[in-house]
Image (cartoon, rainbow, N blue to C red; front, side, top):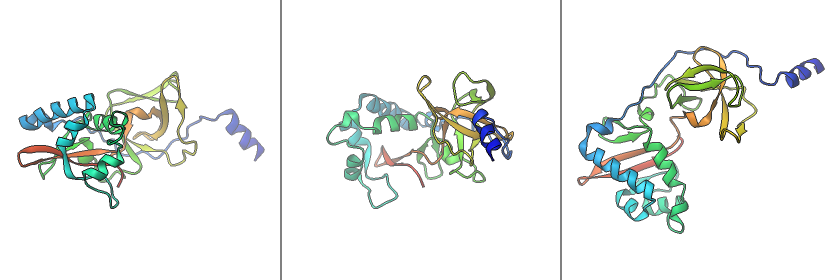
Length: 224
């Protein structure tokens, strides 16, 4: 037992192979460019977010907006949830929305524009609770959880799996501003990736619908 414990202390980042799985790549999609009216709306919406303009935001949020799996719904509760009444400039909503809509839109069968696109395209054979999409091109997968570690692979818009034996949790590296996530690659190898470059399909997603001739945000929700 002592020898095993000593081995772990000396070699804390040795990575054992994980179970391989089918490689799946979800290339970026942005259907918004195919609809002139929504493309115009998107430009205006991004400007609202940039300016943190709560008055203009109020005009493009549906009165019955869905943002919770609980009892809360509607614009009034939405405003309270994201603290848009008292100090709107400091609300987390602006950044959350900007990050979400910046990942591309998919137009579903109901005619809604949904961001990020991969919420609609994530294959059902991959558990959304344990799999993530690499949201970038040639993202470095490193051997150890630090930015100067050797790169073992580069992935682009590829699904990876969280490592079930990862008991250490987040590994914050201040110099790179990264929480290093331990992930299993389709090849069966294990590595570390900065969590800014992976995203679960169950993280925040936004739904936009056209009502009475105007596009509005009808859903902004996280989880399942």
